[in-house]
Amino acid sequence: MKIVLLDTITFGDTDLSGFEQFGDVITYAKTAPEHTQERVVDADVIVTNKVVITKEIMQECKSLKLICVAATGMNNVNLEAAAELGIAVKNVAGYSTDSVIQHTFSMLFYLMGHSRYYDESIKDGTYSNSGVFTDVSRPFFEVKGKKWGIIGLGEIGRGVAKVASCFGADVCYYSTSGKNNNSEYKSVDLNTLLSSCDIVTIHAPLNEQTNNLLDYKELSSCKEGAIVLNLGRGGIINEDAVAKLVDEKNLYFGLDVFVKEPLPSESPLLSVNNKERLYMTPHIAWTSVEARDELIAGVITNIKESI
Image (tube, rainbow, N blue to C red):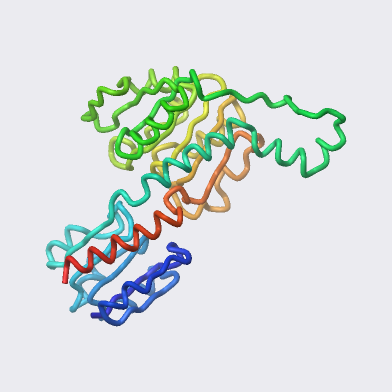
């Protein structure tokens, strides 16, 4: 077989040698849309993370049997066309749960503990010149006793809830589908969650129910000093609204996902005045070494089960 991997840069230094057992392996660090067709035209198996595979591309691939999505979401593949053409599509689920949970708390503690300010105050000499052994100018609070609201109580959301509870947080959740009925945590409506919680974390997929779920009006209802973290999908939270509120109200935001990735240089998120209230990471919550290893192992298993 000929296996074509279209965007291996997203796997970092993860070992990809396991693909060689199936035949010829062609790897590309990145693939622009205009190059996708020519690179996969004679492939038996395509492995893609974010490269889009359209119906037109599939129609030209006469030997294509399997598309492996190196992710959980499969929105970058035309699934209807694949079914029509008899091409199997397989994803990998659950590989990054622990990684995303960990990054959720990493983002929280960075913002809650004013890590940027304190780190810079030492490195720029402010602390050395202060004559005082400590600096309490930016007070931080404990998670214990705080209200923590989770939007999207799937596997990741439940994992975050479990850890948050261990810290002593009072956890509630909002079900974006309306179908989740978890008796372990209190279910509330979205307005109640936003207006009452000290910490709000988003772990939901992007769909009709969640697109632009948190716009200016909704985010404005958050209580003073609240921390809102989006580790679900870009588009769930309105980026223009975040940029405005960071400078208008005492709110803190952590974003790991964006509507367009990479984040455009003209994004208003890059021009806020109160930069210490906004912490952004480049869609890395899923990328622990262990998660990437598990992801590739899952893709290889999908190929084995399909041949």
